[in-house]
Length: 100
Length: 479
Image (cartoon, rainbow over all chains, first blue to last red; front, side, top):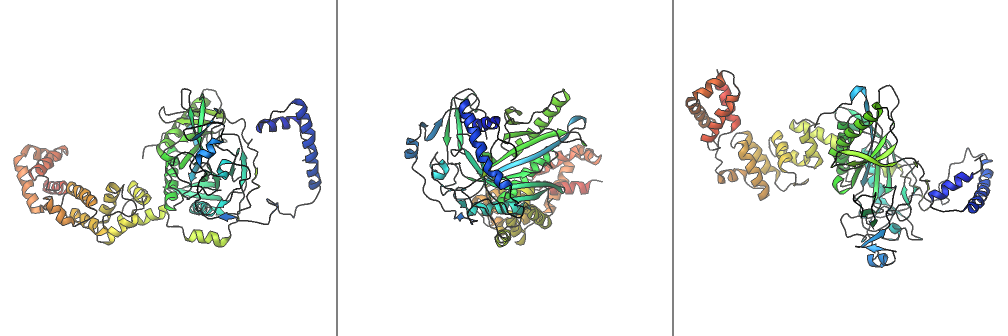
């Protein structure tokens, strides 16, 4: 956490998040993110060697449901709210570069 | 199985496999709409599946237990775990992230044994959700590159998956095939998945690299779209050769994802991995940790059935078949080994029981309709040469069609009367007298002449003499 966040990092993160920022916005965001990261320096200053890492603020575990089927949403109603649909399916523009 | 093609010039193949399996639950991983293959598109959807605002995921207890079964069957440690978001933009995931497990998966550090005591390490077997199904339209290939638009069906989105990641311990394409076959057999045995590669409920990504022993592993390529056990072997053979050719031609291997084309038998670049690890994983804030306590783990372990390797061993001991052979593998994978044991218990001939079941019971499932005692009776008829092996095959078909019955009555109905050995011997003597030339050649050591004699005798008996009995008699009579 010692290094300040760079403009390059902000540009990269915004690209990954599909956000298009102007140069002015990038500079403003860089300064704001740097300010947020300052708060973590306060935590870095503490000795936390004996503290278990926390993954959740709630004292809960094993929240489970039974494997019981409930009705589906109505397809026509759902597709009626989509920008484009065809043959009972969502129609989307071609996507390039990712195939999982 | 087929022979292993070694790489030239001392190159060594290194393979690791990532296998995704859809779990056999009634509902999805995080929501209550149905997990069912083949339904009309978008008829199993809900706010969680569609990523609608405010929708919250809740873990499916049965999915967790099936994943624990997989982990325990693969000798993994089952441990407390958390869920992460894997962020990327692709229309088959409407939330813009996949919920998966990252640094704390449910199952870690297991292994799977292959024939010949080859041990393949299992790095992890973690839970995640499947994506929706995209179909690409327009363009020339029907594939994503060059398509005009895509249609998305979200029935599969959110279906529970377990991803089983092997260590890079596999050294031949044959081992890779054995690994996938054994894994599939285990998944079926523990009831975790229907593991149908042709329907996509079991999918393999194959990581291939080559190196010279004593040097570090080479750069690996990941091959996708490998949809059958046979393709696993073919894709590895092709890809490893390609990598050796590139390196020996002075080139370098780039880390990339490649697509296997089953029709052309080649792999081709799908995308390079320049953006690897840009998924910005972070803890899924909407799910709390999953902490299986020891009593839960013990209960799941206690309910595990006997696993395929142990069952093949038992079948081998009972029937004298090779525990690593095809008949043991097939009969156990179909769950018919208990049935074979029942046939043997009813007095059946053990080896014939296995062979009959392997060859004729592919469509019968784990509990064939033919009563074990009827199949036992048929094995004895053949063993005692009351019917020929050809006649036994016909009776087996009759028995399956009728769903059981009195085999002896079926045999006489078909006119499969027993020709006792003395009757066959008379025919053998007659044939020797009638074909002195063939008999002389056979006596002189020409084994090919045997076939002509056996054929002549079978013909004169109108198929009622057993070829094996005839052959034994001829061999006994040869000076």
